[in-house]
Image 1: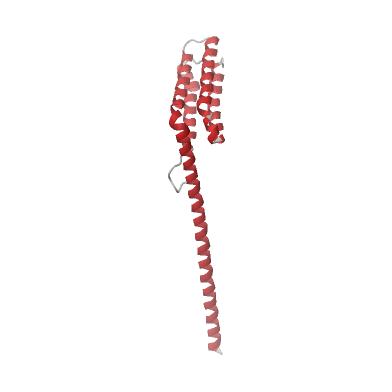
Image 2 (image 1 turned 30 degrees about the horizontal axis):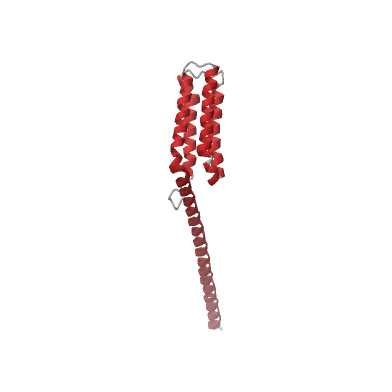
Length: 183
């Protein structure tokens, strides 16, 4: 009887081992399929993002990027007039010029993004509007002496610089990174 019991226990252990091995093999196959599907989806998303960026680059950026730099340079140049003695009429003229430059920039450059990506369009518009609204508020704030260079730099130059960096960062953020692990 003892050998029979030992043999029976041995059969049970072999059956349990076979079942465990089968379960491990099945789990391995399932995990392999999940990883394959996820990698395929990630690859497809990267490819789609890259294609979208290439379209934006070809249709918009290659031909119009100079407008971004020109806009910020023109606003900066116009604002430097505030360092001179300005009366209300001069301030209104400077502000009108800045608003006109902003309107032209919106029409000539930012509007093109509405065709490609409305979220991006709204973000670029928000940055540009924040710049012009902020400068308008500073120009007509009687408590701010813009003829004083450090105050001008703090209130105007830094605002222009920050908005330029934010604007370019948004454009840069849409570019594919090329790092397949970061996606």
